[in-house]
Length: 232
Ligand code: BT5
Image (cartoon, rainbow, N blue to C red; front, side, top):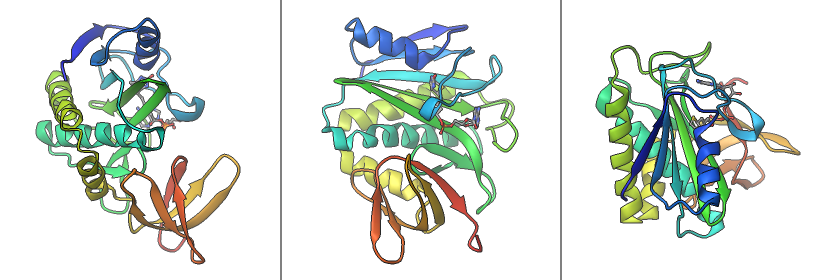
């Protein structure tokens, strides 16, 4: 992947910027990086907060040749690439909380380090990640002081480019599964119209979460997952 990186001191949202560029026909491989976002987006209309200069805020424009039901694997690839890059520039070895959060901290009490937001306007897909580097909001965590954001960006893009160029989505799925701390945990799954609890049994080759609810295994392709303590 040949990345073309555009840097912004301030922008509303790097995802918004690349979606507009995609509509104008920009090629895949376009990257937007910001020191500060004034309207950083989370999933489901939520927001992503970070003081100026405190985080890696980056989005990539892709046109993945994948069937719609496998597009989850692109967010998985971002999470895997970012986890590897964090490990290379800091002492933090993040895990993945399904589907898209990087988490770090004591086993069983991990906190959010980074989040991925993918927005599709097919055939374009814009996927962005915010990684807390020198700051985290209450209840979340960061890599810590002294981490070089440019080195983190380079490590992220080179790993992501490697995964995309290889086009080996089974390898992405298995790397994601290896890092996924949700597997084996008691979880509450919040869907738009329903909530249920169970034990996360596995992540399948399309990146979907399989939850053992006792009577059956439910397959979750999108939703919010809360890790429960074993006694909850
Ligand atoms: C996410 O959403 O985790 C996806 C975040 C994606 C942000 C990147 S930054 C570059 C690109 N451009 C954008 O505009 N967005 C992407 P979600 O799972 O919905 O989590 C959002 C929730 O996490 C919020 O409602 C807060 O509770 C919490 N939150 C906000 N800022 C946070 C931070 N810096 N660290 C940890 N948690 C945060």
